[in-house]
Image 1 (tube, rainbow, N blue to C red):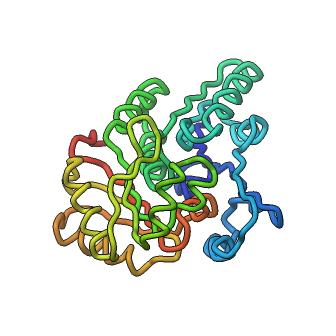
Image 2: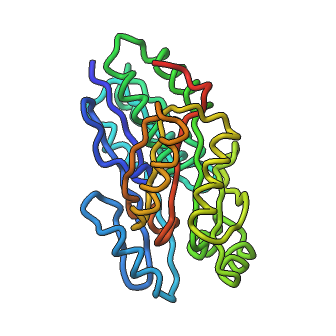
Image 3: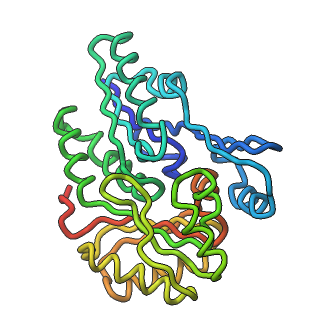
Length: 282
């Protein structure tokens, strides 16, 4: 029996060692160029180009055929997608799951709406990577990843909300105020999968301290953390040191954003995925 894990590229994952894995790319589209979110793209270079770009821009999610291709050859497929509240990825993955199971009787596909993006999706995929090689049944793995997903969270720190506002992901007024005052925004993925602004602050240190406070409030107790950055490795490393100083037993990984997350996080942005103290042990 062959099991496979499939994600869309907003997870920033391009490989998942030890398991059969596929990442389905999203696209960033401008009047001048189309960027496909694959591992070989210069995501930070794209984000820099977008900073001075004045035309229209949008994103495009994978279609049903893209997900179908990713499922091929597997008997059991476990899929993690970008939040369905802000993207059609989850719907396309579910439609592909129905078609794949109809075309291949006996196969099973489970599609999990992460209600998030970036490093929180990565945490979910990595938990699946630990579950898939075990003797657990398909149903047991589905139950386990569902339970784990109730205890993962996403925070973000952004220097600009321009692309989020242009594409309807946050309110335009929030972007205008942030730009006018030169402030940074701290936010979270809500329980409904929306991107909510928590507060606005000035200065990198204030932002990092607020991220730590939010993690404490959500019950972080020293588990797994993934920090994704858009050309801001220095701040990501500072946050990592702060987390490890408070919670020495924590496991913190730093990754660069792919194209989709770089487009929305923009230069300087940080995305923080973490599990709270109630996360089920493996």
